[in-house]
Amino acid sequence: MATRLISSSARHALHRSVNRASLAAPLRLRPLSTVASRSAAEIITEWKAAILKKPVIIERDTIRPQTLQQLAMTLHKTTPTSQPFKKGVPLPVNWHHAFFPPMIGEADLGQDGYEMTHAPPAPFLARMWAGGGVEQNPANLLRVGQEMLIKSKCTSVDIKQSRSGDPMVFVSLEKLIENENGWALTDTRTLVYMEKDEKRPGDAPKPKNVKPRREADISVTIHPTPILLFRYSALTFNSHLIHFDHEYANRVEDHPGCLVHGPLTATYLLENLRHRLKPGQIIKNFKYRALSPLYVNQPFKVCTRSTAVVPTMDADVVESFEVWAENPEGGLAMSGTVEIVQEGKA
Image (cartoon, rainbow, N blue to C red; front, side, top):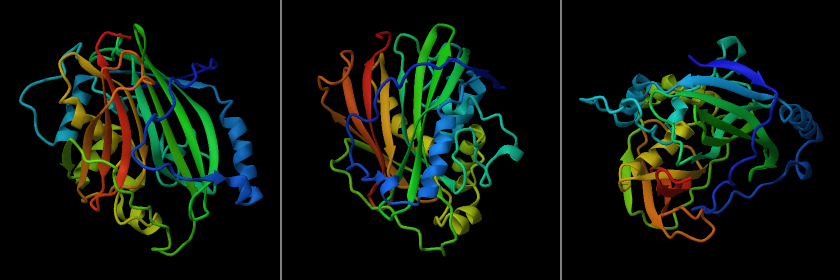
């Protein structure tokens, strides 16, 4: 079980910027100060000053084969006939979400079940996953059986306006993971918080259905069943109601059904690629943006396309890919980039 300590030392700036390339046009947002009420801006400005001074949160966990076996059965829905996660085997990229569960009791959760460690105050109470990234240390991969230490902090807070004129608060977090040999992985993630209101169902603006710009080299269809969403919520200790409570997702948040987790979609993007890598190759960098929701019982496609290695990438990159997820209407739900290197080269 993970334990929580508090450290006063700040660690490292973001290792890399998000998405050198994007499959979709960037979301056009304007600073809230030009369009929203002064009171909302003041609320967030005051909270921002406090949250950016919050000390680093330190937690510990162990990479357990049983947890990895459970996650494998959740993702691929079959019962393995052998134990592939033997001691020393590298942790698949983005599977670290199954570790370091939030050690927070129900009484300290938000009203819709999410943890409030870096959440802004009311009225910004509706949360969604906006994007993130993972960078691995090729010379020091996380491996089964290792003890891990994670250092989490808020790195930025931005308040913007959506196309419909509603204010949104973007909270970016950085999570540095170390093993006994030092730095192994950096997880960056951005969450977006919106105001809850009393609008009638159907009043909420619908996301634009942006089509991919290119054809995929490889695509796989994923069927997000209620069991898949429940099991992933359980493995990640994620009690956010939008992922498993249909009544809440539909009647309160005005979605047609429960939402597929952002990190789950991102993991599927990498699974589609991971099993096709050449011997000795590993994923070094992965950056992605969530563009529109995916829902339970609505099949979606995960797509991969090879791209050229360009001079702006790290010198050790040997292959690069665009990855994306398409909703049932063929629109982009998530897009990202992946850079591949040879294992053991930092």
